Length: 114
Length: 113
Image (cartoon, rainbow over all chains, first blue to last red; front, side, top):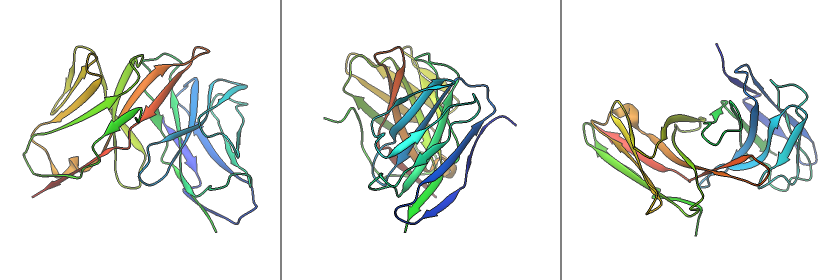
């Protein structure tokens, strides 16, 4: 089955630690995205990548880093510099950069900082 | 003013009712539009794209009004399984050739017996 997978589903982290969230897709999509969702707020874009080995900051990139070494994979690292990391993190992909391309989401990772 | 605004609800409706949601957007350069559905503690799932001519998918109808900068979603014969949060999403072209999705905070629908 084609789709987007994220792991882990739940992650607990102590303050001061970096953690990496996994996102993999086998849809052959060019573009991939990371969002965070907080209660009562819309999804906010962290980083996005439209092709391999290239990525751009979204609206709230501070305290996060990404890489795009393979088309299928777009891991997100939440660093200790991120001041309020507890959130629901969603990875998405779209076929291409076309304005009409819808985005499809993975099941998400819930990160809690203890 | 928020870029994308939705009434948060909840809309509590009886099974079989027709319910309509509106969503307004502030950027007149917005070029494509979508409705997503999100169940509690799950990821958003694409419900439908919204085309200028309007489009229908079974019990769901989406409309776009560019002049007034709003999109709408109509659900007919609502089912218990339609209970969810409906997200309005607007896509605009950004500098550099990419595009950016902006999400509304969602409208919560509760369908009751």
